[in-house]
Image (cartoon, rainbow, N blue to C red):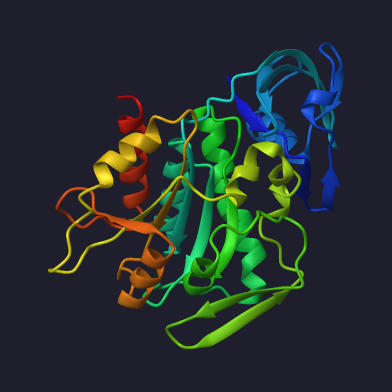
Length: 314
């Protein structure tokens, strides 16, 4: 059965339009579908009145609906039933990921979503190959958020991960526990350590407008708190161990908690610089190399999350 994200704020060719949360509709009532759902379900997939599908808005659970009316401008659906299961992972996880190019970044976000990541903090770094211009931030943020939403529609996750606007790794590591803020800021500085340039954007937001309202939900507020453990996926130098000797016992202790919160720091293809690694360790990131091979930046989130989920079930 087809699944669709019912965005609280739908973005279409006419601008932005706000919609009520699905929880405000009683069973048996009829709601107007967003333009995005109407286009995909009714025009692209050629659905007909009477066809059934599933809607979720990220605020909890999913709703079985039946198409009621379809016109050139809009479509409506009747709410039939509610399933409270969010299909979330047994851990809260945030990946701080240095941006990579093209399909590699799309892949990393898509697969991390399928593995239940809660948020992805985009980073720039000394060896990073992607630095966004101010005018690109909103567009790329919306693109990557849509990648995550599409992955949710496919895999059954009902709470989309938040894709957080890019920030320089050095700036983020100064205070990685800052509260999640989806309100409009005066400016966001994106420092590029490779060429010592700084960019600022006026009226930039920390998340895409698609999930701005959703980001205020209580489910995501833990992202503003200190993580139970911080792990830095990196290739150590010759005189360093792949991981602290105590990491195994620390991980076991954390993963036996009811709902542990774990942060993962993943560098670019060229790896984090020595200064960045040192700064990360100063704010309690523990180095963690999984196996004796070097993972690509798009592969590392998949392997790390899968490993953590496997360990959490033992």
